[in-house]
Amino acid sequence: MALADQEVEICAEADEAAQAIAGATLTQPDFCLVGSELPGGGMAAVRAIHEAVPGAAIIVLAGMGDADELLIAVRAGAIGYLPGSITREQLRRAVQAVLAGEAVVPRSMVRSLIRELHTSALVVAGDISTRQTQVLAL
Image (cartoon, rainbow, N blue to C red; front, side):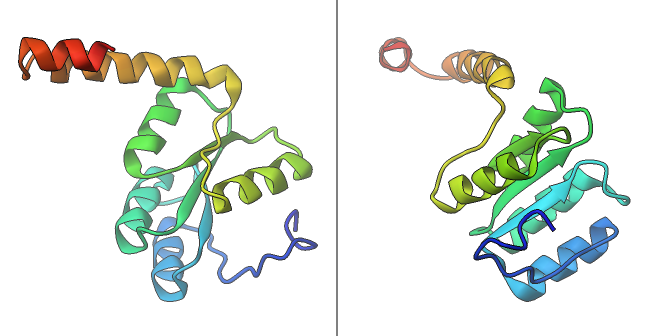
């Protein structure tokens, strides 16, 4: 309903993960909104949709929204993560942003995401040469 007056065609709705995956696979949408608490596993649905429709920009609509879930969503293939408390206008802007090729993450959670990327980079850095580590640090 929040997107009804946008130039967006709603191509499928789902009450549970298997329906979401089937709907996305069948319709091949440009973007998907997936609830993190979707019965049957919201993050499992994100992962399966990302594999079945790699070009779809997936936005996870979180109930509470926390940093751990954000990281799980991004690893599953989401390009956006929004807390359930967002307004209709914020949702509209988020959809426009992902369709324009941007990522959408609450500012309050960006630090957690960057911290995780730093940690991941350090793990990878152990498997590369000293010079490659120096270049990566720059």
